[in-house]
Length: 366
Image 1 (cartoon, one colour):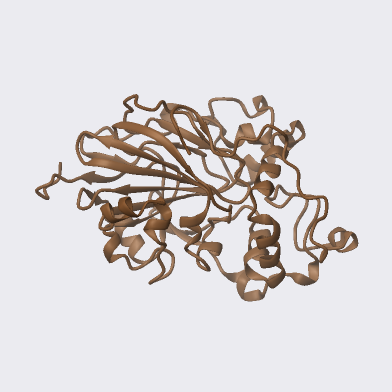
Image 2 (cartoon, rainbow, N blue to C red; image 1 turned 30 degrees about the vertical axis):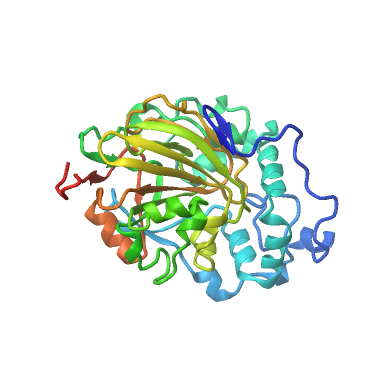
């Protein structure tokens, strides 16, 4: 499916509904007595049903932490995961994996949850969310009280001054707020989150010829957490073509899930846009859906030139990722991005910030 102009990768006319019968291994009494989840806080699994308390995750799984390097603080940090217990239960227990494959990965689940986050009653989640995750409300274009529901808040716009774009002519910028990993040469990849574990490029782009063309290209993976700014931007200036939707399931893109199966990145529902640049050729820009992502919306205009750092679109509710694939030998990534990626550790950086420079065909920096 291809489209130019605004694209909704999960458009739904009728409010989506879950199947009438939920998995039978969870009883009403078990759900009511569950201590696995704190229902007083906003959770990605605030669904009205919960796994039984005696199916809790193991001590090892509970102690596993997601560590990343913060470019601005210049230190390693432990990620504060939204919906952490639910995520670990789903990917770390037998019954969790059963629920994953029977319900959670299915589009209807994410459609339903996205619809749920459009309800006016979800406004009450916004202020606690801002407080608990220490978001700077001064960056928002709209006041916290002005959002009609949690989804509106989730894909909020920020003031331009909150995310200045690096203006140097040869620079490439991060396409999103998030935690980033790079692969300078896909043909020599040592893996992303785990050494030796890499997804299949041909599956990702759903085009064997295109995969061969970019087999030695450079890749940037940007993972957005639910607490992040969820609009994505163009990392380079150029002319974008139509967006192509590649259908697939909706697994989580959190490292907890990706460490178990990196192929999730290549098989989840995703959108791909080819951007023709004036300096380094064609750049592939992709958005990857995930569990509870209601939709991927494109706001750019096909065929209209875009500036580096200009908005491309946004994700509705849920964690998600973007991938940018550059032509072989045309990008030099920043040293902190390369070094952390070598250690299979993500680098936190914001949209519009410098991620690298373009390279001439003769190998010199632009």
